[in-house]
Image (cartoon, rainbow over all chains, first blue to last red; front, top):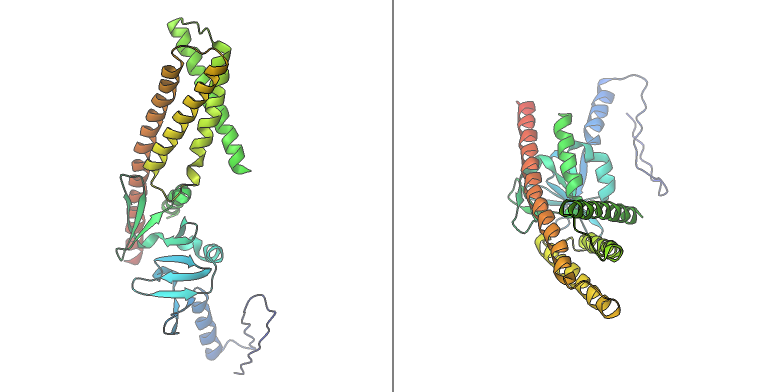
Length: 152
Length: 143
C-alpha cells in the first residue's frame, strides 16, 4: 500500500483519508487501527519528552495550568493538546464533569465526595488525591451525576 | 446580564414574601403600624441591599461558605443599622426600629442559613449515593 504524507500549515484539523479499491486484510487492519486511535488521546511527558496514547477512561482529571492542559492519570501527568472546552465537547459524555473553571473530573474515578463543616466539598479520587468542588459548578456537577444515573 | 435578571427576580420574590408575612402577622395580631408607608419603603431598600450582598458570594468562591455567610451577615446588619442611624437624623423613626430591624434580618437569615446548611449535606449525600450507583453499574458492565 502506498502511503502519502502531506503537510498543510493552514489546515484546520488533521485528518486521514483511506482510499481503497477492495477492503483487503491490510486495509481492514489499518482501518481497525485508526478506529481504535480515534477515541485515544495523545499525551506528552514534559520532562522526558516521552509520548503515549491514553483512553479517556484512564484519566482521573484534566487541569489547565498557564494555558496548558494536563491529563492526570493514577500515577503520571501528561500534557495534552486539547483545550478544556474542546475536551469537554468530545469526551464530556463519557464521564467528565466540570468541577471548577480550570478542571474536569472523571466521575468514574471518584471515590467519594467529602463534605466539610466549613461547607467546602472535596472530591476524593481513586488515588487518594483531593480536589475541590467549586461552589459555582456544584449544581452543574450534581445534575451531571443525576443525568448519568438516569441514563444508565 | 443573567446575574442582573436573577438579582431582580430574587428582589421581587423576597420583597413579596416579606410583605405578605408583614401583612399576615399584622392581620393576626390586629396591630396597626403607625409608620406603614415608611416601613414598606425601608423594607424594599433593605431587601435590595441584602439581596445584593448575598449575591456577592460568587466573588468569594474560594473562601469557605461559612465565613462568607458570617461576613455577609455582618455587612448586611451593619449597613442596615448605619442606614437607619443616618435616617434617624433626618426623619423620626420608631423607638423600636433598631430592635425590630435586627430581628427582621437576623431571624430569617439564621433560618435560611440553617436550611441551606442542611440541604448542603443532603446534596452531598445524594451525590455520593449517585456515585456508588454509577460504580455498581460500571462493575456490572465489566463482569
